[in-house]
Image (cartoon, rainbow, N blue to C red; front, side):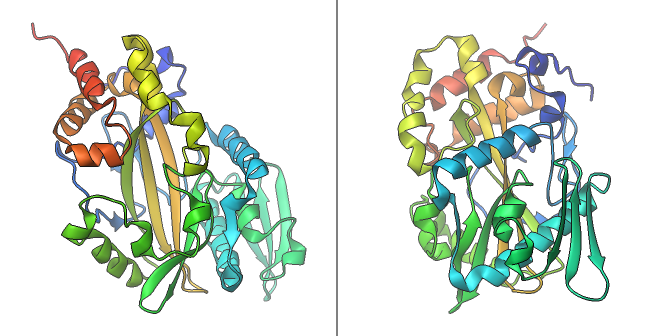
Length: 341
């Protein structure tokens, strides 16, 4: 299928942001589900493909890393490692380095030196060459999660498995979508998902936790999640609600061109990885944003998003934060359907 990306150019989007966008809807109706699959298989889309690797670098790399550093500078609580998770943080750092080196061998190299636990890490995109001894924080310029979190676009959450449950006990999360990592640290997996409508009656969260607790170290999986948001703001955490919350009603006052440029489909690709040394479960959460005007440039995506939004129950649209402008988004997408004849 030939795709005209003229709409991307009109909105100054880099073409790779459209070609690698993980459009999340396999059908016209959306409901919560565990929707997990094995990681690493490329997914073909009408615009390109995504999903070949556990970590993904695109043309937003420098911008998003800069945004993360600015957020951490304002709010250090976005990075926390409870004392019993220090070994997991090292495990996560090395696992992410291996994933980066596998996905981007020309720019990222991890070399073990000798028979011991000394490594040389090279990130040519950022000009980093760092020799370190695994487990020795004196050999890194920062705590391990901070060090590697400054080199990936993914947020990182680490879950400890104990007492027959999972607990979010460490992470570096700067791009949360309407939740607070600082508030959730130390909470169980079931507690964190308490406010989500419908999922408890259907048993989705309990099944998801059982799946995660059986996850094997050599078998990373992935899932997608989505919402709508206003603007290209990645940090829509609870902490910054006063900055972005009013946009949910302001967007109703703009003209159609501005509406299509400002309202974005926000998609998270969540990779679920059992860390090999510590046994913790790592969530890598990569956030992608694409404006409606770019979605509308690809007819299968426009039609599918229109169908999903039109059918979505009100309680789900409310929880996802776009109930105020859902109807207008449906109308906007409907008006851009190809004209017959």
